[in-house]
Amino acid sequence: MTLEEIQEMLANFENRISFLENSLLGSAMSYHPEEENQEVVMKQLQEPWSKKQWNIVDQLRGEMINLKRKFLDLEALVT
Image 1 (cartoon, helix red, strand yellow):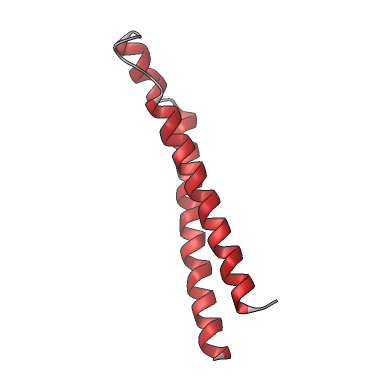
Image 2: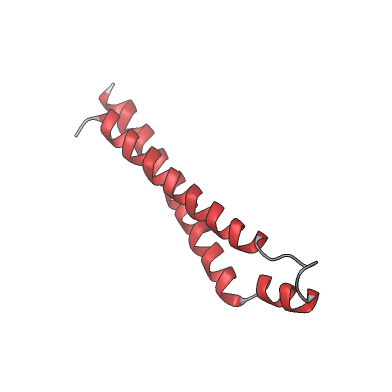
């Protein structure tokens, strides 16, 4: 496996994290207070599962940063 292939895999992984992040944002934004009861909307936005999902996204972002650092270290050793 070449450095370019690893870099492409990292970029694809980061794109998937961004897609997940945008999906979570989209589901949170899909509630329309003017069309629904404001209390129901706020309760749905504050559900614990949502926090768990964001924690997973944060963990993935942290791992992505760690992988990028390792890639840069590897790249420095090879070049």
